[in-house]
Image (cartoon, rainbow, N blue to C red; front, top):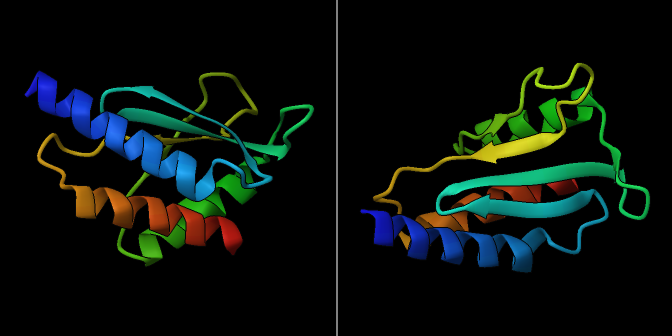
Length: 109
């Protein structure tokens, strides 16, 4: 399972980088294995965090598309700008592509 989580995590991370890595509101895609964070920013140059209502709207649009993702809570008050992805170890490549596509579409509004 650990090897699968590592290989699928690499696949999901590279798929996210391809699909959303250059989006103006994505500051960074980071993670280890299948625990991945997508940092949302207002400005890529300054890395100013995207506000919580906008981040919540992205999470809601993903849910509307049938893809459940999370968002960091109040680890730092006022900062809730990281999407949290923690899919099951049995996720397939097709499901990774669907997950990444849902986030791409949600970012486009």
